[in-house]
Structures are given as C-alpha cells and as structure tokens.
Image (cartoon, rainbow, N blue to C red; front, side):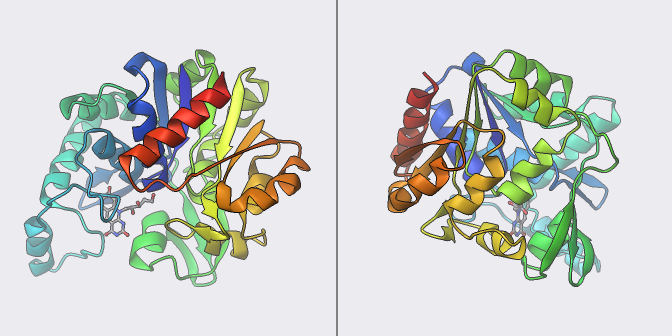
Length: 307
Ligand code: FO1
C-alpha cells in the first residue's frame, strides 16, 4: 500500500492518477485539515471534499474545488438575509457540510464521517483527514492574524505572510487511522500541494515527522513549482515571503530531511544537481497534470520509483 499526503487541487489531481492504477486497499490518502472552517454553524473541510469530489468525478474542473454544475441559490438567499457570503458554498456542497456536521454531532469522528461521505458518492479508496482533532491553520500576516480561508479566499492570498501557526492546540495527534496506514505502507508520497499551507500542517502533527523519519520504505515528494512558478495558488508567493528560493530547489529544501526522492518537471532538469546536493535523488518527468492521461502517467512514473 502507498500513503499519499495531499492538500487540495494539486494533490487531488495526482490522487486521481493513483486511484486509476491502484485498488482501494493499495492506496490511502491523508488529507490536510488545516483549511477547515465553520460557516453558518456547518463544518467545512475543503481539502477532504476536493479529494472526494475529484475521485467521485464530481469536481468542478475549472476551479478545482466544489461540484461541477453547482448552483448557488442558498448562498444568494443567505446574502439577502444579511449573512457574510464570501466563501462560495454551492447548493449540493451544502448537503455535504450539513451531513458532516450532523454526523460529527452524533459522535462520529471526522475520519468516520469522511469515509461515509466518500462511500456515499462511490469513492472506494481511503480518504482520511490527517487528524480527528481541531488543527486549523492560523495565518499571521502583515495585516494581522486570520483563519486560513480568510487569508486564502476572503483576502485572495494578498496579505504578506509572516508565519503560519499549525494546530488548534499544541500536541494535536494524527488519527489512529493515519498511523495505521503509515505502518502498513511501503511508500509515502508527498503530492505537489503547497508545502507550507497543505503539507506542513500534516507534518506539524505530534510525532508524525518522527514516524516518517523512521519509515523504512520510499519517501517521494513532487515539486508544485515548475519553471519558477506555482501551477496554481500562492506557493510561489509564499516561498518568496518565507525567504526561500522560488524554484523546485526551494521546495526540495523543505523535504530534504524527510524524503529520499524528489520529482521535478522536465523543464527544471537543470536544477537536478542542486537538489542532489541536498542529499535526495532526483527523478525527472512531465509533472503538469492537465488531462486525465497526465495524472495517470505521473502516478505511473511515481509507482515505478516506489519499486
Ligand atoms: N476557493 C476559492 O478560491 N474561493 C471560494 O469561494 C472557495 C469556496 C470553496 C467552497 C468549498 C470548498 O470545499 C472549497 C472552496 N474553495 C474556494 C477552495 C478552498 O478554499 C481551497 O481550495 C483550499 O482550502 C486550499 O487547498
């Protein structure tokens, strides 16, 4: 079995590639929940939903999040009622959040609820939240501190990030399901999600870095930066604000102490020796995933590295 650490859009694309090649018992996806937030009393877990909707073939290809063909009538009515509506929740998406909130209130864990939602829309592979506890990311910026979604959606990633605070309280543990998956895995894959916003919240969980350091199988990370640019989202801007190189080398430095192999795009082949100097081996292929074939090809390439 392989375990894939994933955030939202970039992670979900690669996960779809793996899901096309591996049986459900051969793949576990561990998803960042630092982006989770409550809206109107409903518990929203954006990265979990992005992965589930993508695997279910429901996702909006244009945005990468939400459900294709969504309507926003409920949100429109909430606006008429004077509610804050900067986070675009669609009508069908609301059903997911209502279900999640109800089941959490009934006493199910976020892992159990996520499995229930995934199965209900036909997803057979395991999609696990990184933790069952509150681990929301707080973004400290030049404009003050804010929740992840306030930073990402309300403020369009514009505030300059000073530092990121992970975990609702100190010592948040990974879920038992995550630890079980790692114990039974032969490889760990760090998907091309934002290393600061999507992967670091997972790595910040108590004991997880140690578990990964002691992990005997292959540990492979994929660069979300190609040709000095992020394929989507604020990864390049964040690298700059954190004082890192805005390149695959800058990302590789984040993974140098926990990964054996770093996958870069063919366009960045010239950076291979700089990354090898960090102590990782480098694998070069086309990493930009536009079509389904791109996603499956990249997943296939990584599975070969796992052997
Ligand atoms: N991203 C946006 O840029 N704007 C939105 O209004 C928005 C709404 C939204 C609703 C549900 C959901 O599951 C995700 C949504 N996202 C939206 C994406 C989300 O903020 C980010 O993809 C992740 O948190 C970062 O990975």
